[in-house]
Length: 288
Length: 318
Figure 1 (cartoon, rainbow over the protein chains, first blue to last red):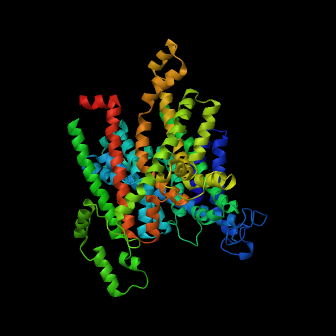
Figure 2 (tube, each protein chain N blue to C red):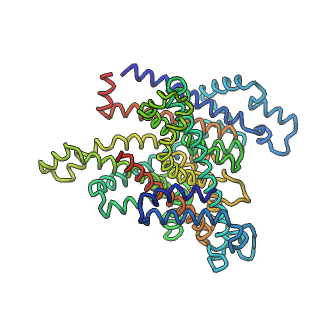
Figure 3 (spheres, rainbow over the protein chains, first blue to last red):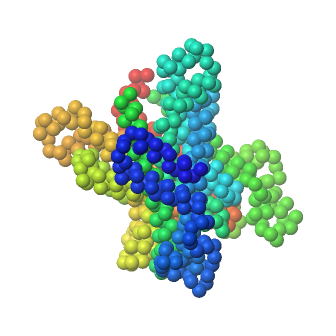
């Protein structure tokens, strides 16, 4: 599932719209695909056990057996980074899908029915927007106790207003278009108009935006796990690994920069690919 | 105009009330008993009951909220248990550190974004533009703690120019304070710089295509006068809005930076409060930050109307 979601949004339009894949699309897709595969099949990779501690082999510099070296408990940094990346990807995709589903539904309803419904939904959105996002996330995580589901819920909640706003604005303009009027004249019910006529027109801009938001969510998860407020140990997280090893920054920079590199490349790939996708959708919109 | 302001003030009061409700509910609807969490494993039934009474947990929820809100309006956010000091005092004592970090970061970000944004808009699609955009994309893709760690690695560990952690208050001298604050400020500033730069660049590119700029060119004004004297002002409205809103948003980044550099600001207070299960401190900081954030956004809204003549005329004619 992770593979599909990470690859298809980018690969499909690129392949359809241009026969020649530019580097700025193919490299990010390649990295994201490799990252997804590696995190799914990590158990089968020829790597040391990410949980095995060895006090004789602490803070070893990178070598053929430990490509990213070992951490302060003698564990393999590369194997742990891959497990940490899995959390990042699952949280990134999960929280954006959650925000997309809830925010999209609210925006659709709010833009289509307007009036009172619209007022209360936007009041609820204002409430979420009344706190700096990271502070709200920290607060929720600290009171409810860290777990994977809660990280996804909390970060997803922060995306709801943005998705709702985009969907609402697009729905408002689509609701007055001729094809919606035609559907209404044919006697189509509201629910069917929303799902069959309006929703399909919203998918493209929301996917491009969603990809950029996955990048934001991964940074958010990294920030939370850096503070120890994400998925609890023994599950490694990229931010948690950086926080745990930063005291050894001078002696063993690899233990900090290894997971950081994974984090950076993944977020960069999502940003580059999302930018390209958004540009292409804008061009198509402009051509219409 | 006055009626609009009044309406906005009403909405502001509503939002502030809602913010207080969120801060209250966070603590009161959280799973687990705060009294037990504060007292730990060794708690007896009596001591838990006493602690629940002290926290007011034995009353109904609505009554507790009104009581609490009344105390908050009188400036009483409760006492912290470990340090046994008023929560509001602890927050206000640490807020200057966070404020210095926020303002410093804004200065750094704008100091970089203005020249880079203006130049890249002027020479759009040139080599400098493309490199600046690539650098911005790389910075946006770097979590704030990573920017900080790279700066620590280079400037504190490799060339020993600045300390990696620690804090000297402003009262002990501006230079000694800056010596400890420079890396944190730079970290947060670099984190927001790409946002400002990209915003200014794209707005500026649009302005530069307008007729009055062509006219200024035709008259033969030098480029720097066109850019700074004519194009900058109309291009900077959205930048000003975002800079204003970011004063509040950045507190999230400030939490990370304060923890990374060991600065005694409210972000550190929040995180310490979480680790030590000081629920009232966490609640107080969340409330304080929420109110600060809402007030900043309100001020930005009002200022925006005053700054942009188009918005002002638009409202007047309605």
